[in-house]
Image (cartoon, rainbow, N blue to C red; front, side, top):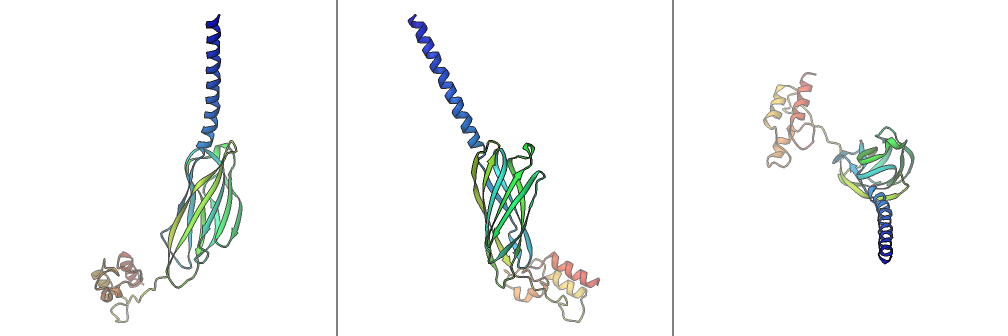
Length: 231
């Protein structure tokens, strides 16, 4: 009789322990599965006065995410926000709220089949570089709050990119030898200086062949002269 009671007590204790582990495990999986980080992709350099695109996404997502609240910060003295567009069918931009130097974008999936898992580039943001006179470096950063199908909310790790802002290159005259026409002689000067850059010691002499004014003599300069020769 005593043995039977002892065995019954052990069985009950094991049952309660297993149930508790299962309950805690279930909650832990849901919370961990939505852990993720934001991603940003942008050109390393842009020209003042031109539009450029920055892609925003998520990575390290292991459980489907269905809603995102992106908060983007940027240097308002260097650029201005133009527009945002979803890059994934079935995921929509619902609201945008803009203020100088920041924009907030709310997005959501249209159904369970459009959840984000693993990693994805979700939206393209278009900016315009303002018209300034000196080169500069600007920063764009993003953080996000995301939600899964259980309603669990997680703050995704933030990310940032730096962009160099450059003045418009000054195009030099393609008539390099100064004979009043653009011809094969001008092309020959470019070809003879091919590969030289502003870092070379003889750049002051060679730079007349840098007809597009980008600080180097390459195939773009050759093509520009060739195009001028053919009219």
